[in-house]
Image (tube, rainbow, N blue to C red):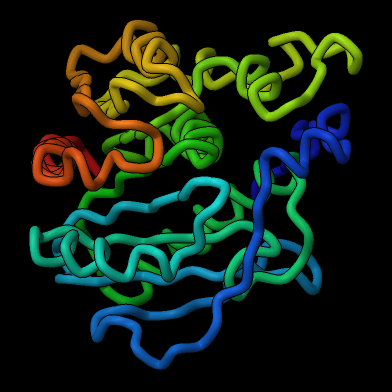
Length: 270
């Protein structure tokens, strides 16, 4: 098990930040999940587990470990998951503490630590069940922090990275959510450091951002893309889209770009 003692965001785990960053809601059993979906509970700490829904296509297909946005839960992807499958990709969506079927209460520190437990569990589950395709990590919005944490730490074991609606800087996001960063003595060095983590990534990467994103400005996606040193990087602008209608405005282009990234990742050694 990875030593996670260095992960400490207790200076940000305060009510005014947590109520802005996290909007957990339960998942109610509907009995209508897609046929290829497998529900799992991933242990992340003593007595705490986060829910996951793995939409699986084929054992040789590329595997996308997905961290969603702050107001979503995995069952929200019951339409997109099968679409990934039809396009030849396995889509492994995971929740945070307190979301969906998960237990616990979300904090920034726990979200970042839990991403490691989720990664290690997922890799083990794929191996035990005979899934041998390339491994890609993907994060949307808040989930970009978890995705970049994993990509930074396990780079040698991951073949591709996708950041959708991701933030480069923590301070502007906190300010947008109503946090007075000056009053809590916040500096970017104390933030989630997404930009710094992107600086280490040298494999295929896809950055997707809505042109008129009012929560995480388009310039944040551009900053992540420009900072990444990878010789194989792609930036996709979803024209006329905002943060929460990015799928509606650009789904076909979005999915084709993801599939292309997966094909590139499949050519990486693993």
